[in-house]
Amino acid sequence: MSKNLLKNENLKTKIPNSILKWSLGILILSFGSQYFTEIESNWINSYLKYYTSSGNNSFVSLMVSLNNIIGTIFFILYGVISDNIRGKLGRRLPFILLGTFGTALVLFSLPFVYSTIVLLILAGVVSPILSNGMHMAGKVIVPDLIPQNKRGRLNTFVTLMANLASIIVWILSLSLLPPGSEIYSYEVHKLFILSGCFVLILTGLQAFFLLRENKIETPPRNWRLDLKNLINIKEFRENKNFFVVFLGSLFVLMSQFAYLPFLLILVQEIDFNLVQILLALPIVGGVIGLCLFLVLKYIDKIGRKKVVLTGLTIAPIGSIILILNSSTFNLITGLAIMMPLVIIINIGVDTWIQDLLPEESRGKYMGFVRLAHGIGQTPGVILAGILADLFGIMYIFLAAGIILWCSIPIFLKAKESLKINTN
Picture (cartoon, rainbow, N blue to C red):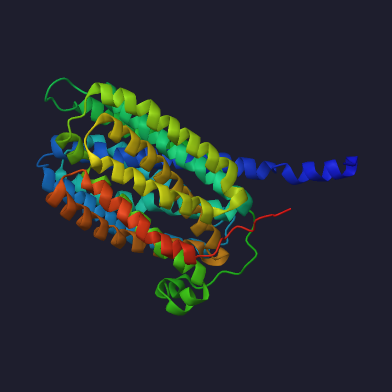
């Protein structure tokens, strides 16, 4: 091979500094937003119940419901507006800054609020209005900034960073768990909530310096008209492949919500012991690590479709093993097959959808995805609940596996979004 040819090959493989900078910013954003999500969904709920004037489980349920409804509305609104912003800070960064700094201010005030109603308003209304600027931008900034042939690998690292944030919160939570039936102290609640404030401030600062977008050349549209045409059948027909992949993603979501809402019940009804946990963790973790390595290596070479279909075919086998009997071997084997494959399915589907988002309307399309996903959780929960009542709690995994297999014909109809170099 000549020196000139070698030089050209090196130029092709060298990653521009801007992409490295953007990638780092996106990974930190993933960590920060997931850290906040863990604080929001656990510690704020607990604080409302135990340390406000009239807190109870009903108020917690009301707060979570308000948060979900208002969050979805503003996720959609911010997505449509951001598509049509042409300011110096770009389309998504203003909403990242709104979400990080605005939500940090809310978090800072919460430990000093003792009124249930005031906390309900702050955490159930104000917080989702602000935080969903960050959540929306985090979903669409990857296709905005990262080339398609590097997107799958970055999404794998994004998943790792989000999981790392969850693990850190839970390790810290378990290490401070009080003995017996005692609840966490006010000081511990305050510590975790304020740590979320600190993490969001750092996330916003790094985003300001690292996530500066290139100038957008396309002219803005009327965002109100975009919002009005959020569900446009004609537009979906013109983007048929997006619609097919999106439809398949609903089945993947339904599958996850067949078991996620029941995990705490499962832990209480199944007799797990320390030996099982110590055996399962390194085995399942090792398989997850191997699968993530393979996804990193191949998702941007062989495409999204093969990765997703591989996961969809094999993952349900793990769910079948889980219901055969309650032996330690079946438990570990089932989890080691199912959980890693579910992770790579999610990485593949997320990247596939990102590839197919129209450049000028990514926020709007992702808003539609958020809306439909909120509705699409229900069938999986209902099917799993019926099977669990009829046959036992472990059958929630069978429901998840069946739903995954049902999605295969849909994904088979979808076209690969990655232009694969066959040379």
